Image 1 (cartoon, helix red, strand yellow):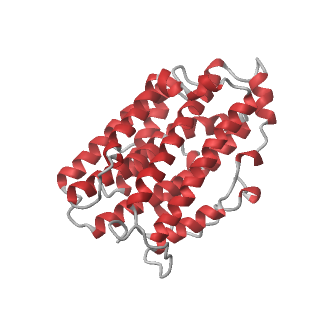
Image 2 (cartoon, rainbow, N blue to C red):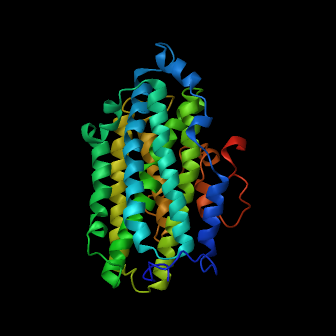
Length: 330
């Protein structure tokens, strides 16, 4: 069983019962990178210049550094303190260890970015307190997953398995699969304009990691459902659908706050539409019906992110995941 097996036995990877988890681990290893591999020299020059970046573009960069710096640490805490404890499959745990390492790399990316640009760390790292839309997103996910951190929590019984699934949906589907994607689109839009290209490249690496996290999380959720029939009741499905709708509203509020007047020929309404498109993809991955029926307003994102690979990860050769030093971008 992927949950509710013995937790204290040695990590007996063989024989492998869940080969999909092993494949995620191998794909993650192939995508190894560190932020210092990416030059920030051009970014530093642009950030110091008074002619290259508009005030709106600077705001967009700061908002995304502020949100992601907090979100990555929250995600890492959830993996190490909650998910790893309750997922008992050795091969799934091996991937979780790798994911925890990647969250540390992502956190280091924002340290590297702040140091390179000589930003005030208090300004960036306290945005989760000062900026309403960032505070609301963080609070939503923390509250959604609070119960699995209770000392006596177990995954025994349908109600508790549903609570654990709520945690997995909260971090894998909502945090990493919805809350991250407006920010990804913003930073890649900057990069497409040849602005903040080093930071944009690092965000692209992060997206490729996150697409694996999301896909693994969805397969973990599906496997728990298969091994515990009866947990996906009509009431539970309706609850998850409602949570994703609330997440969309929060991410759209963030898009409007981070990009109130539009930049780069783009505007907050387009980012809000993109969030709905992404949410429909997440609902489909959970086996729930699409709600928004929104077309992708940013078709160029499909080339830069792994949205298409989330659904077809095991139907294609994994050629996009390479060691960071040799990874070639389209």
